[in-house]
Image 1 (cartoon, rainbow, N blue to C red):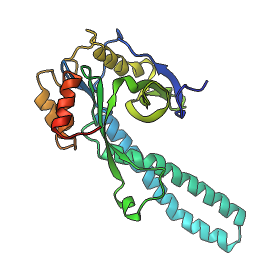
Image 2: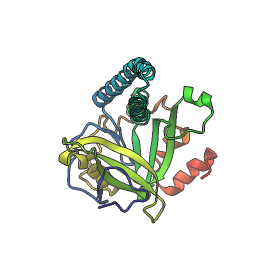
Image 3: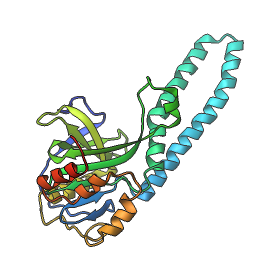
Length: 275
């Protein structure tokens, strides 16, 4: 059955309801929380190291394959084996597409996100803040110099009400799932962006992070703010480790602790931020 989102998301498995959950957190992705906001990192260091090595291995295998393919192509051309030549060429193009659309983005995301790329949820303003590295792909019409600097950053503020939790699966026998936040136009299911919240989980574990965040946003006591990597009185240590030097705008770091929309508006006005 297709999802209600437009456009569809590949691997959609089901939607997640908003509201307080009674499931406690058993996870190392909660980095910090206080009475105003919480911060979840997207990948723990061991996950990043694993997928960094995996992406590097895929790229190296591709380079070896390219090297041997040139010799194979020359043999086919000499023997005029055009059918085999075009089949192999199409295969190489497909492999190149996979490397460009998966392996390279995975390499850049892990190589340049060793602070965990925390996602910030402010429950008093209903705002969500994202600052993460990404690798541009699926775009062709660019100046050639851009391809020498493919690393970009997404730094955005979202409304919690416009985010919808979705479970996607990886189509494998391991039944691994991920939680994605679909960013929709207000009051619709027209997707304008999406955010990876909790990547690659097995079974019921995929709902723990979503449940804790919902309990936190609904001021439910199940969400213990001292469950994280840093206690609630260690905000300075958290920011020094996860926030400093990562390109977060000054106004946005102040907005983490905004206690009302009026205070948030004052922060934006003071920093000359326009919507």
